[in-house]
Length: 489
Image 1 (cartoon, rainbow, N blue to C red):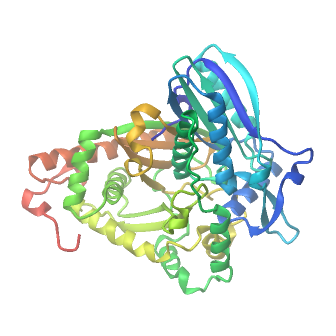
Image 2 (cartoon, rainbow, N blue to C red; image 1 turned 45 degrees about the vertical axis):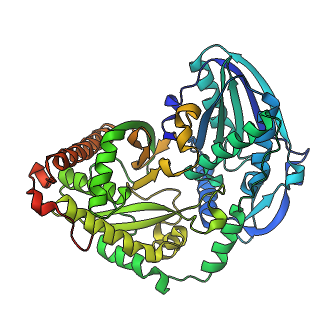
């Protein structure tokens, strides 16, 4: 899969059909009260949406996907596959109800009640017209405080079709989009061939949220589970790790967002860098985190890397292919002092990552509420934070079909108050998708940041070809013998 701005989704002219969950005459009558509360992520997201509405903030946020089906489309088979997808994943059939006590409850449409209403939008004569229609539809209809919380469609051409879906973030994370593509492609292929799809069962995100709630409902600011977080705050001075760059952004203000994706390394170069990571005994994402730390040091002078690191919460087999928001936020710190080489920085990054795993299950929303209550009323970060994310799509379903399916994910935000970087590995190389504030200082700072990351990667790869030399701050290098793996890495 690729992660790109919506403008790079690559839609073509074609005939559009769209599907939405069919509400009853009274929408609430279609939903059954559940005894399971919303997850911590969902509750905070819903509260942020309420705040945005009260502030009359005209901001659009959604997650979307697109993928190709080659050949002439079997429309009834696609509709049946989409229906199975909605029935399989309980969270897609949810609405949310704010209770008097302040809790957020999930109400659910039973699978037997699920119906999809199809709209024949008609033919649009250009890819730009298709893109504008889909974007306008997502912006207009995907709203945390409305129902349903997603919509689906297809652009039918003579020799292929492009399926698209848009979701409110309250329903899912980016990894869920991979499973959505796999679900629909698999079921469509069976149905189009006249076969019965395998009725795979996926664990419910509502069950995950319920388990999480019960486990951490009695957490307090003094609980030992928060020891690592308290240590991070003592070191960083705040729960939220500031990015050490001047972005020209005022705290508490939202700015128009700028979304872009660039390729940092082609596949051969990415393989060379991965071999370098393996020589140090670390995974690719740790090596990439070390590179980012070195680049940040070189443009900011920072001597310690402090940042947020999102981590998947799917280690339980029940959630491996479930659709939902299975992401927790952790904080990592490690040294990046002047003169430290890649082997030294990567060793510190590995230690930092191992340290944070002890608190990996503690919900960040609870940490925020308990350890930074002065910020908890905010609907976004209090100031620009340092953020790093990494996802290797080669290890996920559909990776071997990238050339055929051309699957893409899109995280779209109309406004932002920080800068987020998502590093992505697929069969075509190593990519960086970023969303930043569209103001001159922010654009310039992230351009320098990205250039420093690219320069560090290229120098590491050149050094490995020359025999293992590794860059220091400012471009100096070590001798080959100094770059050999250490026992602790």
